[in-house]
Length: 122
Length: 373
Image: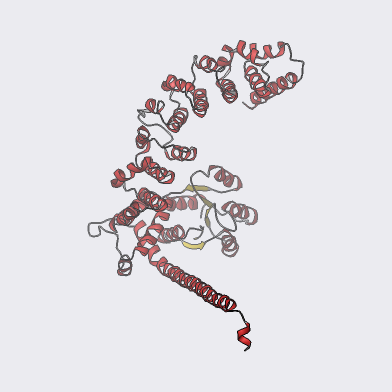
């Protein structure tokens, strides 16, 4: 199962990477929005976890791109900061499936990934 | 001899010029040398940081996923990191990375980062900064202690909640509220320095959304000699709908600071009772234009029952020479269906400019908001 994580904070990225690998997923990392878009094209992941505020392309652009260009329905989890409720709503409007607000527990993220993958039958 | 034809003063001038040129060259050389050395040192530090990134990330990840067991009570530290830990520059780098991680994670992960901070005794590094003469270093120290939940240091931080430097004071107040929530607001009992509007917003954002068992002492804040404390207490009373503070809030309508009076109006709007409209209008005449406009806006928001009590006064205010006041008055009257709108229609100058425009706008707005509701 391939999971793409797009996040510009290195520690966060590596921690999520570590947690998801521990759960047995194949994890791919992107440090900015542009790299994330490239990897989506290249890998066609089974799930995407993306931050909202990233250089070059935002999390919203990623959600929009996936929903517009990918025939396969890829579940997307948004990582948002406190006070970004409006942006989260916008992301849902674009087709995001779930969100998690920073600060969050890596274990909670792991549970949400599992749940979302089982709900979407992956 | 030809050299005797040159005047000695000219020789002297040339000599000065040569010396000046050497001095200038010397200064220039020193500046270039200093810059080169500085850039070299910076580059070395950057390289060092790059080298440290991997072990630091690894240590932080280990900490985040650490699980205590009887044979493993402490987060394991590699010998390499232990060696580097002797260097304060490395400790600061590690601490900065830990704080960044702490902001992103909650639960066990965040607790483990605090555990690592305590295990490495990094509070000693933070505390050395507290005695610095530079305000930004002291402010950073408070930030670090708060981020790492160092409640043991609360005594040292609490003293800084009334510091003359605005930024130190802000960090200290935020830290205390971070540690204790509403209980942390006790510093309002003694703070004599102003709390900026920005800081008030920050503190309100930090506080829990619901007021727990009840916050005691708000009444004394509403009587504080510090206007910004009153202003903050009014905001708190408004957000948490403290109806029992109605009379104390109404008392602020007589405060010497106009900003406090306006804030009191806004607060009363949300905790109003049957006496509020009379209290507000009773102070109308002796106040300035800003209060008057705010009072009318408050009356509009308080609902038709409150406005209906003041119809006579409002009819008179329609004749006020200030167009903004005329419009604000018409808006209040338009909220009262029946008597209010009737008084707008019956107004002697309803057909004249600008009243005709004002009344049309007020009624239009009311219809729109009615439809929206």
